[in-house]
Length: 457
Ligand code: URP
Ligand code: ZN
Ligand code: ZN
Image (cartoon, rainbow, N blue to C red; front, side):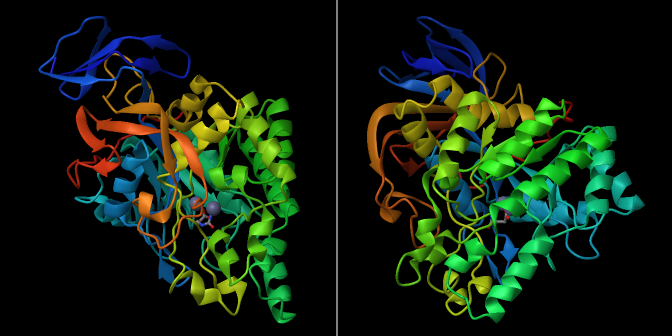
């Protein structure tokens, strides 16, 4: 064996057991006892987890007059330090572009910079007959998921015909349509009304994005997915009402899947009223909700109604970027950082918090996204033949999530006051150690583009 990880407790979505892991040519080659290798890594007292898979990131995204602050170099180093070894980012079709052109643009952004493996969902801006044909070609080339924005009127938002055509085609070609579900027309009306009335503080961002607008769009998209006979995946779910729509769709037999993010599990609408414009740090869409929604989302994760935790990592610096909206919440770039803190937060508040088992944790942050997005069996589990993307997880390591203790290229940490228990001690990508004791020691640009399998759920 090239490398043996010795004495750890292996955790998959279904099992926990003690065994050595033998690694050869970047893959898991043996699971057993008393294995020998050229190099030995001691994992006594540690868990060994499959590398995290973040199905929702926005690196170097041009958005709202600026660009998200992490590029593929800084963002993937931060991901790795937090135990994530695969990301799926979004390539967004601009006006007049083909889907392929959008993909090419984002492939160039990642090439030579990404230090973890990566794939792309292609966000659809227009769905004429030529684009429908293109969807099949992209699936054949390993891009088996697409994105529809039902919000951001005037930029990313598309109409229901576009959504419906994408769903119909997705069913034919084996793709999964992911959706940002908020009623963009209602949001647009409320934003304009509030700004015209002089209501321009960050709290009005939340009050312009009511939970009903998320629930309505979720319900509408599920009905259209049912009509098309296609599976559908809702990104960044934030509201209990929307989760109810998802459950109702599943009860009818529709193939509906949902993701939430740590910020919706841990924070509530009060954040927007923090003094000195601090609320801007949490301006994102959908916004933070009333506290009661958090419990519904945790139950959704524990009980199986939600299948994945993503980050929606879309960081903007407070200085110079969030500040663009000091006089008007509508000009605050939407998004917050999280690519590095997902595993620690979900482990700490989910597993240590007694909400679910460590196996469910692995399912939510790794195996679930791998299954939904065509990455199993190569990623998302610990099994012979899988990539040796592994996290040696120290369940006793305490880590304060301050800006200084993190690697994301953004001038604040939303989790500044939180100390988690449980953190990566070592992270490995395809057999190479890339993180040791919170330091990136890998090779910048060693991340590979992943050709994902068609999705047949
Ligand atoms: O506010 C957010 N979520 N920004 C990123 C873009 C999106 O909607 O996912
Ligand atoms: Zn979104
Ligand atoms: Zn997003």
